[in-house]
Image 1 (cartoon, rainbow, N blue to C red):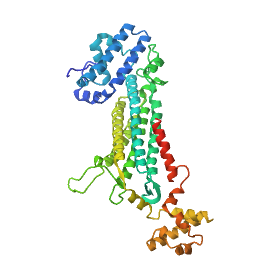
Image 2 (cartoon, one colour; image 1 turned 45 degrees about the vertical axis):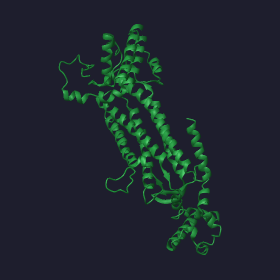
Image 3 (spheres, one colour; image 1 turned 180 degrees about the vertical axis):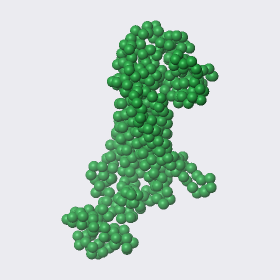
Image 4 (cartoon, one colour; image 1 turned 90 degrees about the horizontal axis):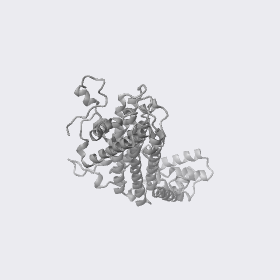
Length: 463
């Protein structure tokens, strides 16, 4: 289609916009994603106009029927939406007028594009948040499946990227599960502020027509209506907050990716990535590159950039609406698309990776990861912790000099450094004891991890 779509604001003008400016001003190329949401809101607005006496029952039926026809036409022919309209809202109005004539010109009574845009945007985002939460749940499910496949695997836990204490592989998986759980909760909280109806605020001062805003809100499934018309048309907090929540999801996915990239290196060798999410080198035949994970890590910055861009766009705007706010859509759209594909790919990675349990267990028993257990052993013998910590440190130094792990040290050498050390120290230093002693809530003992894994699975199954 090549026919032009008229603007919604021509009466005051005698000249036409410069073509370069018209292209610069046009948003239809991206806000067309709001098409169905805007039609849905327009149908509810028509019902509001009927209640206000602006439209008759027959006129309302014709208008709403024509609006539904637009959705049908778009579904049947993708090229139906391939027009050079200024925006999706002017597109809908002009196509409506084609179907019902001058009656279509009545629909915009009592509203502005300002409250119309904000309403369609919120409607669309509300549904997308539900889909995004489902995607997060899928990644959580993949984490649980990875934990359950290797329920007995042990690996080193790290601080400062230095081996610290042994943890269960499932405990590591559950750490990321909890991060994503907060993301689901955060999105649910964002949704509460998205789900407020601005329609009826008109351009900035409210409408002079007696439209029942609460009835319109109920029809559209909103929890309530905005309380201030100036704020309603100029508020994009919900968009900023949504992209901020996406940014935190991407922080968590990027951290997950970083861990797995490191664990997949030859130097670590803890995991093997599937061919389904890896690529090779155009030069080096032996290479297996973790491109999927590196792209997740890289795309995190893209979402962060959208968050910063929204904050920068809004920070200096006077009340009420300003055209700067047109920049909100692309930032939100791309942040959503990027976050969703990263969640999908992360789940694929997790569902297909394998853990080298022998390698991870070996790493968990080397590097003095049981030094804290030695200090705790001395505390249980009555030694003050700070003294016990110092003693354990001196024993580690001696072990390094001898080229042995703590559990390989001669008892005589240990007793020479501390008379409180006896034969029972070797049981205390074993990997099994090191893990089993972490039995408090949230700890990495096998029993606690099994409980946590079961509880997490039940939470997911109950969704």
